Figure 1 (cartoon, rainbow, N blue to C red):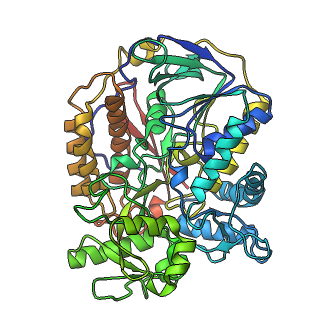
Figure 2 (figure 1 turned 60 degrees about the vertical axis):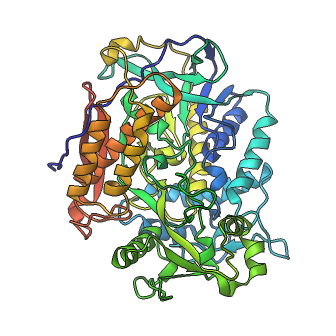
Figure 3 (figure 1 turned 90 degrees about the vertical axis):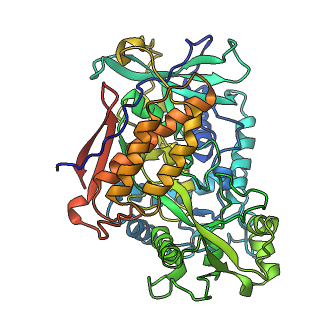
Length: 561
C-alpha cells in the first residue's frame, strides 16, 4: 500500500549528553516502576536474577497509582474468558491480535491472584467475596477495585512493599533513561542485542549525573506519552521516553495513532486550584458503571440512542459523543449527573473523585460534574511478541509503552493493569530461560553519524497545543499538516543537555511518529477519528509500523492484519 506522507522534522538517533561518568552492572535492567515494571522485577527475582529498577522520579509517581477503575479479570463463575475476549476485540475494532487477547484473558485471573498473594487488598462484599463491577465496553461484572476508586494506589502500595522486602532489587530513583546501549552485531547498523542503558541520575556519579548501567537484558516499562497533549490525565513524567528511546535504537513501533481520550476528565474552572495544569483529574467510568449519566447543557442524556450501552459504550464512542456536543454547542464541557446515587454512596464508593470535585467547589451529591475528554492511554507503542520481545534482541517492553496487540484500535476499560501483570510475567519467564552473557557496548558515535542533538524545553507548550489542536480527538488532513508544520519548526531549535530538554526531544520524537501515522491512516477506527474519512475502511485493517532511518527521518511500512 502506498502510504500518504506529510513533511516532518528529522529526529535524533541519539540524545546529546556527556559521556557516562560512572558504570554499574546487573543481570536485568527494568526501566519504570509502575505495575508492569515492578511485577517484572519481582518475577525476575523469583528466577534468581539480580535486578536494577530505574525510575524517573520516585517509585510511586507514575501512572499506575492514578488508575481509579480497577482490573478486569474473569472471576465470576457465570463469566468466561471467551466473553472477556469478545468485549476486548469489539473495543479494538478489528485490530486486536487474537492470540495476545487469549493470553490476556486466560492468564489474567492467575496473575491477579498472585498480586493478591503479595498483599494487594481489593474491595469485598459482606460475605468476603470480591466485589465485581462493570465499566464501559464490558458486558459482565468483572472489574475488581480497591478503596472504591483507588485501585492503582493499592496495586502500587503492594508492589512497592514487595520490592522493598527484596535486598537484591536495586532501585535507582530520580533517573531519566537516555539511550539504549547495544553490542556489536550483524544488524543493519552493525549492531546486535541490547546490553545496557545510559541515564541521568540526580545527585549521583559525576557532576552532571550521566552514567551507564550494563545488563544482559533491558525491560522497558516506562508508561505512556500523554504529555504530548495540552490536556491529559497522565502525570508529568509521561513524556514518551521509552518509545522515543526504542525508536532511536532502531526498534519497531506500531499503532501510535491510537491514543485513547478518556471521555470524562474533570474540568477545573479558571481560578480554582489546578486550573491550567497539564494533568487533569480523572472521573472514572466506574461512576457511570454505577449509574451516573452524561447530560448536555439542557440536561438531555445525549448518549442514549448513540450506542446500545449508552454511557457505558467503549471509550472512543463516548469521547466522540461528547465531542459532537461540544462542537454543536460551543461549550468546553458536558456534565456528569451522579446526584441520584446519593452522597453517602458516592463518598464510600468514590472517595478520590469526590475529593477532587470538592476541591474545585463541586459537590457530586448536589451538583453536576463538569467533564470533557483528555488524552489518557496509548494503545500503540513499542512492538512486541507474546513474550514481550521487541525487534531488538535483549530488549523487552511491557505496560503502556508496549504494543502487545491486546488493545487494537481502542483499549477496553481496565485491561491496562491486567496487561502489565500478564506480560511482565511472560517477559521474566523468557529472560530466565535464556539470558546471554554480558556483552560490551559498541561505540555509539560510530553508528549515529556523530553526536546527538536536542530541542529546547521552551518548545514543549507549543508542541502540546499543536498536538491537541490538530492531532487530538478529531483529526483531518489539514489539521495534521498544520501540526506537522509546527513540529518541523520546533525541530529546528537546539537545546542543551538537561532533563527538560531531553524530555522535550522525546516528546518531539513521539509526537512526530504519531502525526505521521495519523496522517497516513485515512479512515476512522477506534480512537483514531478522521473528520475527512469518517468511516472504517477494510483496506486499512492492519498496522502502520514506524522506525527512524539512518538520516533521522521517519519511515513507515504497512502490514495487513
